[in-house]
Length: 190
Image (cartoon, rainbow, N blue to C red; front, top):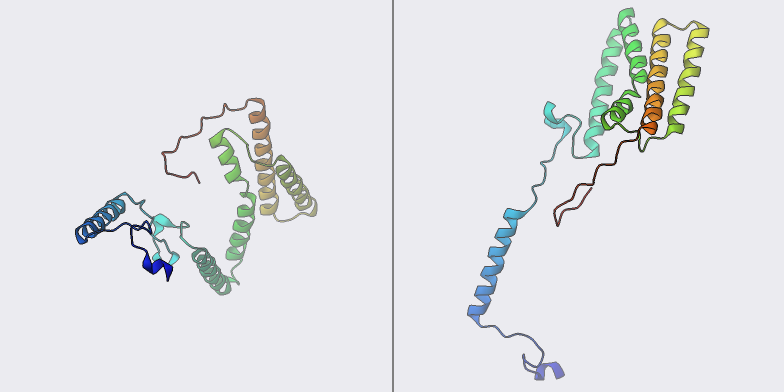
């Protein structure tokens, strides 16, 4: 009741004429239109079901990765079901499985080479990899496992030793740290 008796100037509420309000609203509309031009462009949503080979494995949501893995598993399972009686198919599939496991360290080896550094890599982890791979390969050799197991096991141990060699070499000759990139005002580093 007390507030109703006070005038707009006493409440510190600015009083606008109709022309002032129209001018103010038109300026806000213009500034909103200007800000749309300056907005950061959002990358388009990528989906597994787009079947775009240029953006394979660069999808926008986790469910797309799950769909891809399920589709691959279904197709591979069906092909395996149809070809299970073929010795050539079974041997090829087994070799590809063992070779894939043997190549697990190659991305780390390549990353280390590209950056000329092993920064952020756990030496203890690589030592555990190497010891596990060496014991597994020794088991394959001692038990007379098929040739592909021994060959891929030796390849795995060699990749592990190459990574350890990189860690040793890069520790002896460390790279000079590169200056950090300066980001323009208003952007955030990820």
